[in-house]
Length: 466
Image 1 (cartoon, rainbow, N blue to C red):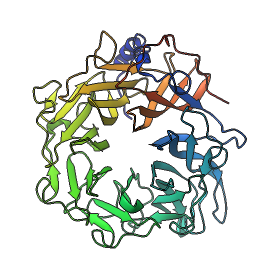
Image 2 (image 1 turned 180 degrees about the vertical axis):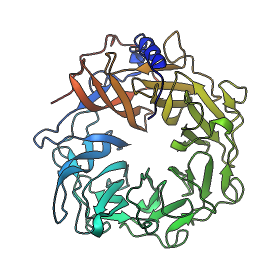
Image 3 (image 1 turned 60 degrees about the vertical axis):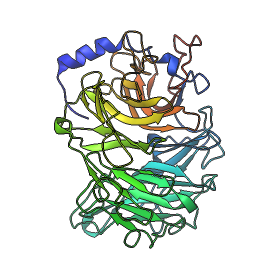
Image 4 (image 1 turned 30 degrees about the horizontal axis):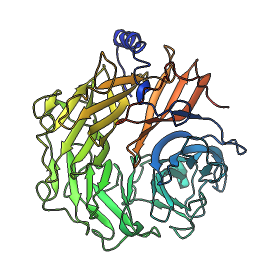
């Protein structure tokens, strides 16, 4: 994620040693081993899920994860590589062996979507229990050129391809034809399911000169009644990395500095910002992109912002009101560095936010506390952006640090996050450390609004499964 000086890194290693157990009371003891479920190979099939960036929670508490697994492509010359995958865990963090191939569905490609690699990045559940995953895949063209597209595929509740979607269950989608000579796009897919199981999609790279949101019917065809031919576009070159959906089907799409709201017909909403567009001057904090966005109960947009250009030592969170202007009640009294409507929460050098989600009493944020990926950071803010004094270590109220791999050279990096109907927060991550016996992915479950204090310190023994 970046480079930094050795002296700062050494100081971080020293400081995190005293912080490793601070978040234990927020871990949910009813999930995995003391709040952490580590997974290796699935039973029987021996597949592994890697890089689980997409997370969704079903109404029955089961967890869906989108990532990659080992597989064989269906190209004319098949190769063994990483292929897009969706896995499902039971509510307690164990593999759901009734799903796919003993817990994992691997997408090898199809006659319509030829692939020699890729991964899933997002996953969403629609009303009938079907599952739609979005990711990226790559196809080799004549002349050794590579075509990259956004992959969408649909699974039934049991983890098999739904052949009524797209062509035999999948589609390779481009907002516009790929420019000649382009070999790779980093898609940053964001999807949501709306009324009638219509799907909304945005990516950072649309191949258009504008930001765009596409709406699909349940069978994977573009909804021609939305925008122009199924695609709503901005009036400029706005970058959309995440989208959120209001109950009335208005989409709020943002890339951090520029946010659009589209009506349910796919045109800019004139009641939001200026002509549907909200542009914010973040000054020296200018975000590179929005890593996360979610709407709270008042229709305000909470965004976690990521910056390569600004001060790399804070969790950056903005709150935009339903009218498209910064919400002055958030950080209005400078509870944090920043300005009204925006907080640059200072933690440790090189901190970066992954998710900032509304909770019953404020905002819960998750991220990385240093650019070398040593520690997971947890922050809880009150509605005005001040630290929630009921959370964290007594020496650092409002935030804390967590390391599952606990030795000095351990690696703990979050991938994705989600929240269930009970307010519990799930974070997928990769961990490595001698105390774990290796490197493995896993899920952490937090209870940010109901802290436990049930004698879990020291943490239970955890090891990477085979």
